Image 1 (cartoon, rainbow, N blue to C red):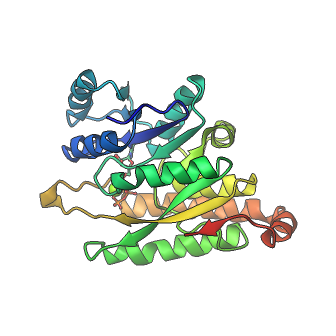
Image 2: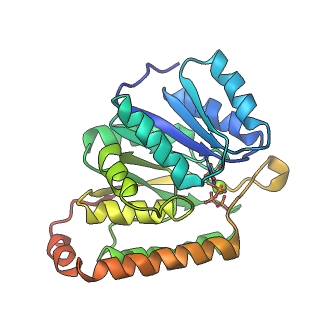
Length: 257
Ligand SMILES: Nc1nc2c(ncn2[C@@H]2O[C@H](COP(=O)(O)OP(=O)(O)OP(=O)(O)O)[C@@H](O)[C@H]2O)c(=O)[nH]1
Ligand SMILES: [Mg+2]
């Protein structure tokens, strides 16, 4: 088992992921400790299964809430607890087996070399990726390029990322949005606005089919309405930031690897 880090932890928001979560958490634990899973209102027995797993593994902690509040709200709860225990950064990853646990050390090293930055996964899709996901994110990415006046955020929606806790907590605590699937894009844009540079690193993403235990809670209409209203909000927020962002554009430290 890896030596537990005192500064960086892996944070996994998890809502009714099915058995895939056990594989995901075991894979994360092979590469990092501590690993925290935030479960809110899951009804598929995984809260109990994960609690069992935590009893056998000191690197794993399960934080359980009875009411479902959304992915962003789960991350915020994790940030709050992590900050209280002295951690400075969290690596967020999904519980459903889509993200590459093997790249946790690479991302953590990038964060150690760039502690002020957010480290963003740049998805590399395989043939199992649904077209609607691959092409759909182009629209969100185009909006984010507008909102940040450049191509700083490689991918607006991919959830395999490291965030510096302090600025993200400050941003989230000050508003009621970013609690559900509007979390990932708004977090990247608002952190960028706050002066946090982005380091983009390629990471393969998988789309396990239903037969393999793949689960998605993204609801096409409901969540696209949420994302559209988020982009309208961000575009409005951009208006008075344009001069400052254009000034920063030439000096940006954001990079792609
Ligand atoms: N704690 C918690 N986690 C959530 C909630 N909603 C989603 N998640 C987690 O957030 C991650 C992403 O959710 P998914 O439903 O897979 O959505 P997605 O990956 O953006 O969409 P797909 O590409 O269709 O899989 C997974 O780890 C989910 O378990 C929630 O309400 N609470
Ligand atoms: Mg998913």
